[in-house]
Length: 197
Length: 162
Image (tube, rainbow over all chains, first blue to last red; front, side):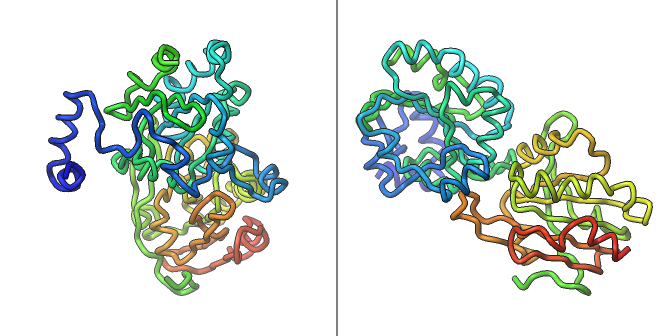
């Protein structure tokens, strides 16, 4: 019934109610969700140059290869080369990589609805490729499966990812943080999730 | 949509860019091209090698020559968002005249009938590689590659028509 209300004009009311409650009960993922089961048959594309793409026959990475038997911190953001993403969201994850590793995290992953070549060029510009694994979700299938998409047509970006972060152990979400407003970095930052591991 | 051809009037459409304050803005193609001589060239993707190393540089290098031959605007379009286009444009600091415009949802590319499905490369629906010479909205020259190869869509080729 909640989802039926969300689809109609009641969605804004629901959003403000859920904001008051501090919940996002209309998202498909929550703490305890198995991220691989929530997005079956979904792959991400590792950030790469075109030549690397050719060499790997444009292979993609299934989610189970990323998450199974691993401790992963993953964060999603609206767009490569956009202001908040570049200046506020990525850098603290890069700067705190040693703290993540000290807590037993196998990889810190950044994902966005961009192609993997753009993600690669952006990651190189941010000098963050050594610390963070960047992946593209070029058709949004990963974020759509997890119901973590938002319409950013107003910023001429189209359908993009929410700004979010998660701590995932062997595919199971242990902590999930989703910003109310994609332009904020309040709950989805590196410092918050470090405290949740 | 059938691909745009010589003799057709180019469709109008809205493309995006970032202004000097890095704010997203839109512009209509007709407002740029009406009563003018313009070159519109399309590329499959920002930050991909043929686009970055061959197609765009050719137009940047010959921009003065093109302007000398009466071309008012040289427009590069790609199915990318305006933030990516803006950042990609900045990788060409020597550029003086080429305008980089974003066709994020491929609406204009589809209107031109020049879409190309590159999903298996992780790009999604993009533009074919092409170059058009348009005079007062009428297509005079349409050099369209069948995919992403780089043969007839170069600046060199289109200069021959001027």
